[in-house]
Amino acid sequence: MTKNMTVGNPAKLIFFFTIPLLIGNLFQQFYSMADTLIVGRTIGVDALAAVGCTGSISFLILGFAQGLTSGLSIITAQRFGAQDMDGIRKSFAHSAVISLAVTVVLTAIALPAAMPFLRLLQTPEEIIQDSYSYLSVIYGGIIASVLFNLFSNILRALGDSRTPLIFLVIACILNIVLDFGFILIFQSGVAGAAWATVISQLFSALLCFVYMMKRFPVLHLRREDWRFSWEEASRHLRLALPMAFQSSIISIGAIVLQFTLNGLGANAVAAYSASQKIDQLASQPVNSFGVTMATFAAQNYGAGKFDRIRKGVRQCCAMSLSFAVVIGLVNILFGYQLSTLFVGPEEVEVLNLSHTYLSITGCAYWVLALLFILRFTLQGLGQSFAPTIAGIMELIMRSFAAIVLSIFFGFAGVCTASPLAWVGSCIPLSIAYLLTMRRVFAQQKNSPQFLPGGIEKAEENA
Figure (cartoon, helix red, strand yellow):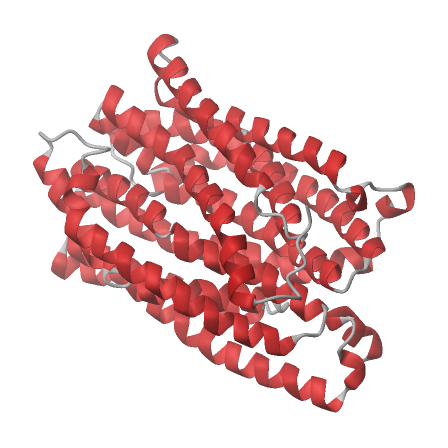
């Protein structure tokens, strides 16, 4: 069911919207975690490294698609806040057309580029073939990731964060079953783990679509809703493309980091792969609070309720920072033990390196919490320039750690990349948030007509 976030206590709305979103994000992480855990435990450390070193390359493409679908749904959320039902249908139709077109282009680019990407990163010869087998399947299944992210983001734009969770749980269980089936029964190696991920995502996307059609009449598209408009498409792309490129910019920094890691050897790659999975899981609470703020800010901006946005940001910061401190301490104190989920106890060097990464990043989770809230709030307000600049800052700081600090501090220098990137990104985001809120309050004061319809009413009046 839809959830109107423009009325009621902001902290309560944000918290209860975040809970199913958090659980869903955790299960989404289980897709890749299941691959890594099962591959590392059943095939070996080299296979773990082979899967792990594809992460930054796959996110270069998949991150673009995820950022795109997130940006497209912002317009849908703003129109829901303004109670513009015709606009919601047009937004959904144009989002679907744009997503499918981008999927065709991304697949055509990514598949033939898979091996050149791996060569460019100087992937160790002993793992490059397995890496290619895994990456080519993931790239071939881009459509599954795009469809699920599109449908999930549209549901969240309408205030429903619980339904994607249910389908993710089902898909995660299917993913684990298929992992064991492809790897242990059919002996498909790392490619089998990739097939399990793609099939599970596609299944989840189909479930999501069927549910949308049955439970959300507002998404039942009419012939006129499919009438393509360049004006409508450009309005969506003005938000979606910067968010997509922002994700890709961030992933370029991760690729530079992966290049450095490959030069440090297979143990460093395996340690980084294992610790990254734990890190990604640990950061999901603060990420989920951030994603919630995109919907909260977009709906309230569409309704012209700017005081609620500022109040929501403050309350969300209090909740998210509390989670960040606790989770950071867990990683610092128990990082070594957590790493044994992915690596056998006999791999002492890999476990020590993994614990080093988790200890360094754990100290800076509070910065990451602020980053997510500011970035997603700005995106919900229709701001794309500042988050893009923040992404460029992340790229610069990650590259600095990978290229310079790794020379002096080795693997520990590489581990500082994420904390430095978070700090660098928070600076422009903080400035942009303060300036944006000052601007919208000034517009509200000087132009009363700005209030009822939010962003699109303001554009019409301008």
